[in-house]
Image (cartoon, rainbow, N blue to C red; front, side):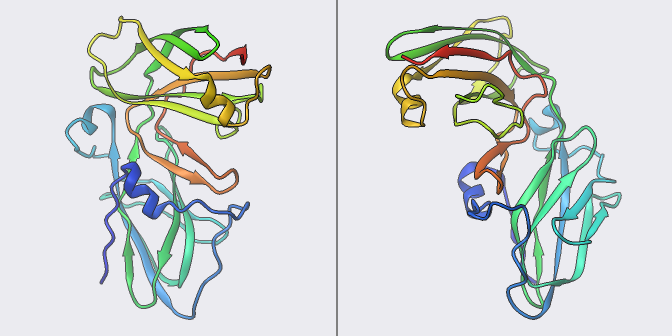
Length: 252
């Protein structure tokens, strides 16, 4: 029996979450004759339990669905699920439950006469938010000022999303570029913080001088993502449901 253990750090995610050139959200066709087993255990986490790498006891009733197939089920009281007699191939497996962020395995591999085990970490949505965002613009740089309203004094992740599309963020993945700070230590939620983005970086991502650029900020407590096969972009799925107000400026 083969077991593949996945920890959702970005450098390991690149091994599992292969960016697809296929612009559909369909599974790869079975690659060879035969059947195997696809299974995992769900590890539910909150901002508080994540600090200690501890699961909550909310294991049951996570929804599991394999895109483009009739395979679906819910987890048992220990967070486990299993599809036996599954055709060999690669598949997109979606995980969801009310109150949690959605997650996808892209692509989960089923091997003949073998068991592929993907431990999956599901995170409670956070009500932490970034607020009071303002910016100043120079010929070379955009300087953002902001405050954080958080649930825990801990490390958080911050991202700013940019696009010439005024509907950036609707859907979430229609940004042209994302700039991030990682592992911000939040010990005083009232303090004003700063983040700087170089104008040349936005130009290098298709936003020419004179273009109106739209942007917003968001915060999350885990840097987990999956690759959206429809857009080819990374979806950071543990970020707040309360992003900052949208801003816009003319790029120098």
